[in-house]
Image 1 (cartoon, rainbow, N blue to C red):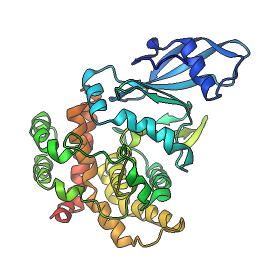
Image 2 (cartoon, rainbow, N blue to C red):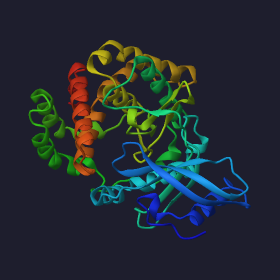
Image 3 (spheres, one colour):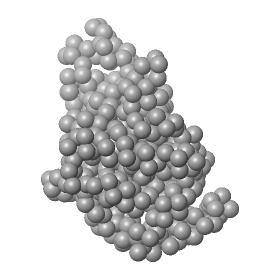
Length: 358
């Protein structure tokens, strides 16, 4: 097929390229050709652009009426971050090497390729409409949260303490450029300046102290496994009465190896308002732990699970600082990162998580 297009919108794609891409994975038969397509933007992504393509055909009609095309951002800062942190390549490799063999629900991948420059890529994914994207700002109901913590166990369990995942360089990226302890403290003064008066001072003060304890935070204890690292509502789709899977997880650009409780603490801290979190978080973590035990995980007692949950309450605050300083700045993005930092900051204070970094 033709070489990979340098596309940030579907206007950079053409019908023959799409036909060849979908034929190459037998999503289209040899006698099926795309004659035209239209599109609409979907999602809230800041590192990438996602679009729903409505496909039209010459000759024999095909069952595949829509696909989701995910492309790199058209913002130069986001593209530079995507290249430097290799996050575009990580997502491509996730779909190529892991997705089909994991029980966690993800969109089926029809096509996944990235250019040698680590920027230009095209993902063609299953359209899970009418399932609806979660909303990070609004938060979620307790039952949705319960579904989400049970679902992420399906990512964690298959590769729990699996030494093979530590051998993949693209998962275990290590350099000063990619090590947040080398650059995050320098970012924090600008973050604090941006959100002064918008985030409570005790939370910003806690963040100052956290910057001095990053080495302790990154010293991840066993167990380790595949972790999503950005496991939050904006990266989930939920079924509706009209259809769609009960839950599906998207946006795998931050896949990494780490402690599983980092995903759990991140989701609960970011996805629930403070009052609901305080009421339900222990029950939700116990639900997650019970799922592990039910699926045969041994040697991970509740006491360790809860301690790690408290320790990784920093995961969302960490992400709010780093992402807000790296990606394209938008009004919704500013508000989302403020809410994340506020919710996770209060989570850290409520759980006395700082004492675990001493």
